[in-house]
Length: 78
Image (cartoon, rainbow, N blue to C red; front, top):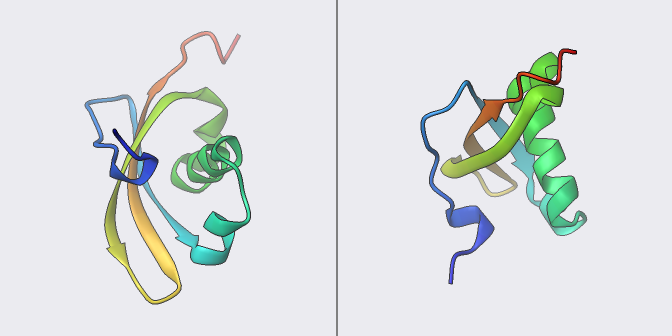
């Protein structure tokens, strides 16, 4: 069984990092979590992101930092 926080990134058009507070992780569902990652990792291009992959690259007592990658939807700009 694969858990969301163990997903491994793949080659993609968009790449970035996102830092998320543990309280944010506890207070959101999966769809909200993916939206949060996309917004933080890709800023203004987040609306183009499809098929997010992510992996933990660091943490503190209160946060998790993830490397995030996604394909860019070519139809999103139309």
